[in-house]
Length: 292
Image 1 (cartoon, rainbow, N blue to C red):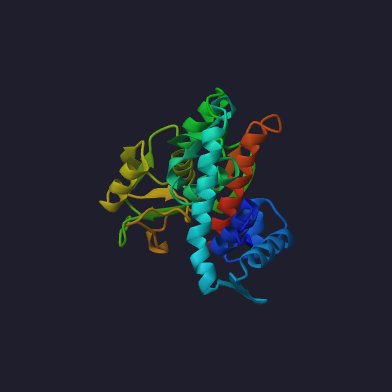
Image 2: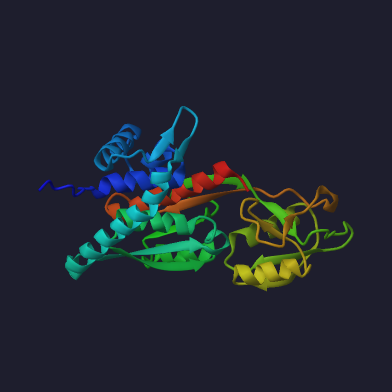
């Protein structure tokens, strides 16, 4: 009797899912750390193995066939099952923990995508996640309490890899107007906060009076103060929270300086941590390309 069982190597399925989720052989290769030609070979081997086309591709686009659409869930189930088997039979002593610090004001932007990709590549690693203000995370990193941080760069600190650079903007409730003859009502993170320090320094350099009308140690508190119309805040234009907008030029507020978002790790002596740095920078580069 002929054996018609399929031998689907996990690498083929991982490449297929990466293409299906990114819509691009190039992006799939970047996610998996493979060359585009290798990803293409994996797809061809998968299609030969199952005897069906899973992708329709031309010079401009990649899309799933009907069989490819069905294969997405099947491939995820197979890979999940493989991971469960591996976890069950892997010695617990092999598990590692990576201590990761993420600045609160952009923790929800693409962090989930990065963590998903990292878990697929390093399923034996557990993540201990700390979310907080950049100044606090610098303190934790310098004390050796976290392995990797993704933060706004401190003035004068040259460490880390730049994910993106941009000028901060003034944000507030839609329609909010700040009279030029009155102190600027400032909504800011509690110290130590890099954006708070930059906002105050900018106002004072411009000779504008200001008053701190709301201070919070969390993004949700900052957002609530802004949505309530208590004042204005300095913030990344790419990470503006819901219910808040970039203020119009009618407010005549002084332009804010540039700021960098960086991933900082311990260096080559900790390859696991540096793989996370690579994924963090790559993930937020995607965010920059997509825009606000």
